[in-house]
Length: 331
View 1: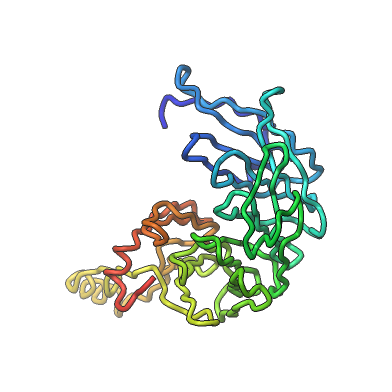
View 2: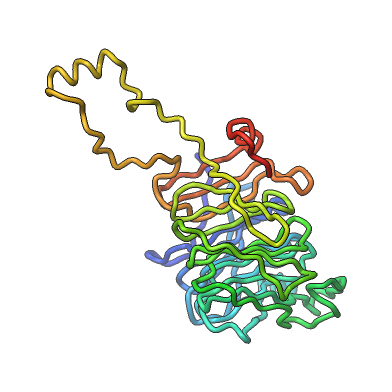
């Protein structure tokens, strides 16, 4: 906003590839193509954001970053075929990292945290979705056991690996309870697995364009967005992933909103009806949706979410308004 400054330590020309905000501690973390990440703390006295250095120790671009639910650490994916789990070192006043390397074989494109704060899921360009333990002895972590982590596992332990996708994994997300995991990939597929039946992945391959992002509407529904330029709902019915609805209500008026008199004058002057040569899409976004984010929950039920697209738009979607506008819609 106006009057707010930030000391930007990145070299000119280096793109910031991912940003995440920690709402409880009011900290921002960014990562970029220069192989660096920074944690930004708000200085109320000077009304500006101050950057703290993160020691990533990577040799390729940092591609994706996410805070953990407790906001005491964050995960940074990269093109170096490794995942950096970063935490604050009070003695030296900087953020340090520990690496998860094996068996990651390609660039990490997406990251998500389990609600328990100690398990992390990634999707990468080697067509796989993986789940790791991120328990840090430096922070005295003692996670509870679950079907995801049957016994207390040390840092970087591979807890699960799924290879049902035939394309890059663009988005991954744990359900609100953490019992289920969903991911979307470049083969136009949506994949969902339950932690109690990890050998059985529910999967649907769509006839539409690939998806880039996925969030949960409830424990039995997911919302996805991608190259079709609109969010779409899919429901979990038994072991199947079933199409629910397109979540973009078209309010375009008939005849492009042109009045009858204006249309008559146009036909009279041009000798016929005007052809619609517009390239404008019949959707809110005019280019691919890059990412979906949850903005409001009521328990385990989604109430509001946002979408950002390659058209430069940020759109806020109200779930109750969508339910009222779309007949038969259930999340």
